[in-house]
Image 1 (cartoon, rainbow, N blue to C red):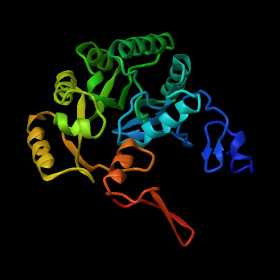
Image 2: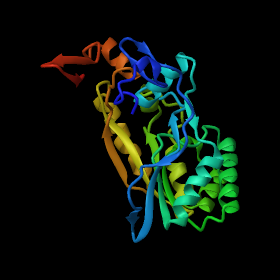
Image 3: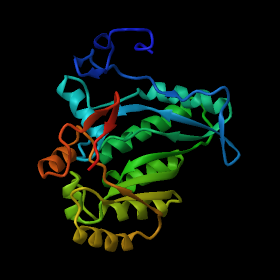
Image 4: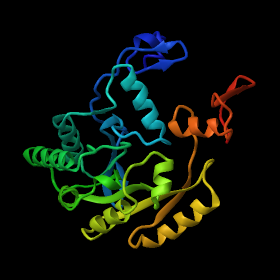
Length: 272
């Protein structure tokens, strides 16, 4: 909005241009992607919510982590989440309009520490109960290594119906290559814990990428055999400019350096 009004980018919070960074990012208030009326999902009123910005993790291939790194280096926070009272007020308002299905679109909403994540969910549950919010269902993205039995219980109690589990790798070598530090067993364990509580899980697998060899692909495919209760979304690893993975790919001669090139005034992503 500020740019559309003609404001100087350096005077806007959270901006970054070739000429430098703008003012420090500010905490956000949770807001839905507003429409004139609620959407509908399986016959229920539905809404999308963005409750946070950034991510506390540092996965080497992830552009969100790269932006969070830059914000932290500039003196900001890696991960900013709306206050519980704001989140509860927003959900309550939408629920009283008929909303029952909510999709949390955050890259990584929950704290990385399982105990802190359980405490955050308990606080949100109490805030929703205080506002007399009826039973809701929600979906979100979830790191596999944060899921414990206690967290799975807390999510199911709050109304988690669908979880996109970020597994990314099914062997320790693959996880190391993309900057993930979770054990290879974390993904299947998370799926088992959540699916046994009635949560529909969808997992991912980053199979093909610039630094991936045939032997790695074979091992990853074999690792998929351990996934019993979730469809798996197969994805390529994209070496995105600004990420640790991109820098490693370029250093090995697999990229084009700066990551963006000009042609006819158009900015195009690097091809690896």
